[in-house]
Length: 106
Length: 408
Image (cartoon, rainbow over the protein chains, first blue to last red):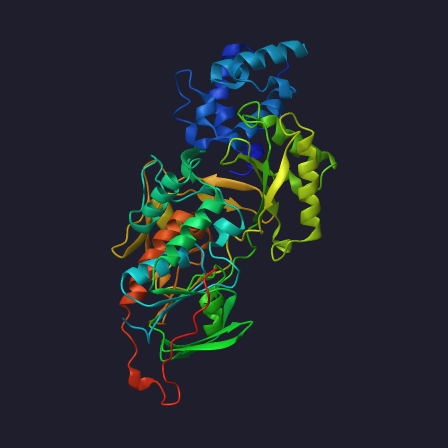
């Protein structure tokens, strides 16, 4: 998958910043079913359940793209200081991180 | 044994070295011809430190024989060599200089192999489906090899096959981007550790996007080196500048290194080595059989297997971005020996990235481990090629051994 594919993976617009603050559950669902599969199609099955280790699942190129995908999906800015295991290590942690970031926007 | 009918291997990269060793072990006399000053090929000259194609996706050795011997030797000889997960593949992390030392020693230990450095093929004479004569050029003159047992084009660019008939070569259009690798040392260990290490890549890409770095730098990649203080910087080489180290490429490299030096962990780093631009696809031969994208994706097996491969299909665009298409878990495919046999020529073979394949299949099969396995199969086949009937040589062209060149 090319970088550009992220924008046209299933025809739905990628940059759709939420108008209301989404729940952490809803974010985690999207992380599992949409955002991570955008950068790692082959990981779709592994993402279905359990709090898996995203740093083991994704290579650095995929992680880098995930950061870009998350930023544009939620209209947030991820700083270099945010690049820590506590924020990116698993779908649960990533969802909690996104929830905190989006809450800070409102 | 067959001094008058050597196997001529052209190009001393992975495919050529393996072909030479295998042919020599099978009892053939081998002339290994290399245009450059040293043997080793892309791994050595372009500084490849993550050797792909040696393992399957579970990390098991995928090809026995020379490829496995190589992996074993690199792991045992190199204090810092290790098998490593890279994305969803397994690679062998080893220093390119160690690889060079190892293969040079290996070639030198086989009395059946004569190495001719800074030597190239000037002319090839073909008659009724056989290569009958090979004319080699070098600074010290011209040498003609009459009635070679077999010729292996392991040049990586089909240089020999093109001399026989340009129609036997398929060039990629548009060409895939190449890569330029710069080795930095003096980097603080752990600097690239994910996820924090992604900050350096983001900084480079952001700088390329906003124009403070040349636009070409948006595809730059950083990787752990072999030693703990090393970082390998990989720059994309657009196909327009692939043929030579250009000034713009040097400027790009310097700009990237300068920016990195301002990043935490890189302040004491310095450039330890710069590779030559690597070419991923320098043309593929038309073989007796052509490996296809479908063969790769479906894990096709062949009775005349030369190599087994499970490496993902690397899709490089001309500018230098890459997308990996992994094969389904557990799947591998075969490279048939016929894909290394040049069509219609009984004693002309190829080995390595010039394998007869479509662009997509080649983008998986071209990795170094597979090239070693291909080379080994071709070397054996070349040694087993029936020697030409001496009567067919004209009385004025007595078969003569080529002038040996000194080893480095």
